[in-house]
Length: 191
Length: 325
Image (cartoon, rainbow over all chains, first blue to last red; front, side):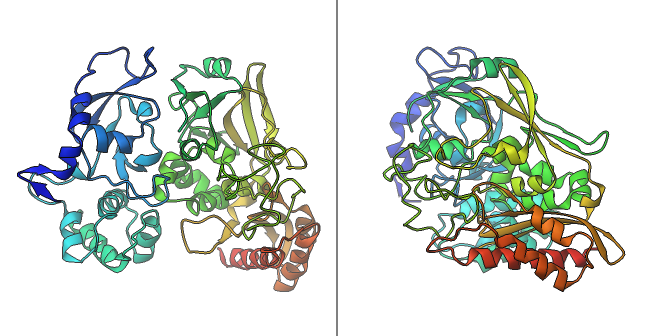
C-alpha cells in the first residue's frame, strides 16, 4: 500500500468517515430504526466490539471500508458476482456487498485484517506468497477469506473440489494455478 | 439505491400485518439487495425476516418440511436430503457460489427473479418490470431465454435450479398471509407470463413463504440433477434436468422428469414420464421418450438449439442415473 509519512492513502481519504464512526454508541435500541431513518448495529469486527449507526442501505462492504477503515476487503463488482468482498459472518463466508449492515446486529465479522496472528501470517497468506497466488492482488483478500472457510468446512479435499468451491472468487489475472497450489499447501498446514 | 424504511418484525404474524404493496421481505438478500442497487426493485419498506422462526428441516412422518429461512448450504448438506432426495442436494450445490449458498434462503431461492438482461437494465423496456413497456428480448439478445411457456409479452427464463428439482418431486409451498395459512402446489405457484408477466407467483398481498413440503417419495433415492451451462461452475443453466426413476429389474415402472433453463417457470414433463413408464431401461427408450420434450416449444432467434439440447440433457441424465448404485 502507498504510504505518506505513515498515513495510508485510504487513511487520508477516510478521515472524515472515521470521525463519524465513533459518534453513536448509545442512540436507540440496537437494530431498530431511529426517527432519522438510520439504524444502529452492534457487532464484533475482528474481535473488537463495534457500534455503527448507518443509513439502512449501507452494505457491510461499504461500512468496513468507509466507516471502519478496513480497506483490505475489496469492492469489485458490487453485485455479488466476483467474490472480492468475501468476509466471514458468524464463521461463514459471505459476499459483504450484498449483506446489509442493518441485518448484522449481534453478528461477528472477520475480515482479512483479522486473519493473521499478530505479525505472523495466516498459513494461507504465506502460501499465496510462496505459490504466486496473485498478480495484481485485488482479488486476493477475498480469495484468502473464501479459502479459509472452504478448508475449515473440509471442502478442499481434491483439486476438483477446491476449484468448484472457489468458483465464486474471480481472478482477472488468472492466477488460478497458484491459488490452487496455495490452498493445497495451506490445507495441510491448517490441520 | 432508493431510500427505504428498514423494519424488523418480531413474529410472522407481525411481518404479514406490516407488509403492504410497497414492502419487500428481506432474507438472504442475494436477489433483493442486488436488484435494489440496480433500482429494478424499489420498495419503500424492507422487512428483515431473518430472525423469524422459519428455520429447520423436519423429516418426521416421511417426506421433508423445509423452513423457508433455511440456507441453501445447510439443506444441500443435510444427510436426509443428500441420501433421500439426491437431486435436491445436487440442484442446490450446482447453484451460485459457496458464498451465495451460505446467504440465500430456500424461500428466497424460489422467489428469485429472472436473469434476463433487459429486466435487469432499467434503461430498457420490460413488460415484467414495467407492464406495457414492451419486450426487447423477443427480437433482441435471447440466447438464454425460454422456449416453453413464453408469450408475446415475455420470454424470460426462470433461473432457479432448486425449483426444477422440487417440481419433479410434487413439492408444495406453504404461505402465511393476513387471512391465514395455505399451501400451493409448487408448479401452480409459478404463473405463466401470458399478457401479465409482472405477475409471477400465486402470492396474495403481504403473503410470506414459510416453508416447502416435499412429499415422501422413497424411490427419489435414485434421482439426479444434471445442469448444462456455458462454464463448469457458478453459472445459470442453459439446460437442466431433474430425473427420478423407479425400476423393477430392467423395467422402468415410474419416472419423474422436470427441466430447467427452458421454461418461463420450472417445467414438468408428464409426457416424457409416460413415455418412460413400463419400458425397458435402455438408451432406445430414453431417446424415444426425449422426443416428447419438444411439443410446444417456441424457439427464438438465438436459442433455436435449446429443444435439441433439452433432449440431449435428458438422455444424458437418464444414462448417468443408470450408473448410480
